[in-house]
Image (cartoon, rainbow, N blue to C red):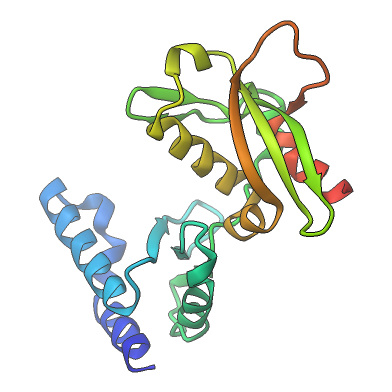
Length: 206
């Protein structure tokens, strides 16, 4: 409990500075990020954070704490967020939550994800269920990419797909429902492929 209090006390002392991070110089941004990481890692080295800045209709900043899908640290994550202070301009969230922008994906208007030299859009990805294990209620899936042969099965590509799935399903549900992900090239021979943005609904129907 002492480490939890240490983190939140530090956050309360510095939350005004954290809110200004986008307006800082690159050097100051690195400095602020370094101290957030340092204090968070003092509590648990396996946790990361994401800051979501307010949009017009939401005046609050959101501080998301993630275990990057590692179930071994879900308890530490939840305990930390459960003990978060009440700050008027902040919302504290455990786990990356599923996207609410499915309508944009259906119209092909979703923003691309850019990872180094890899650019992917959820609306352009399809999947096929491979195996569903009723005992553990988890599914193996294959995701099809138009340019998989060019991208190859690199570590960066796998990380990119994982991040996309995490934002599509939410961090907790991705761990609960998806067991294995394989990647493949989209071909004309493949039939009955499902749009990746329909994965949430597909899992709901199981």
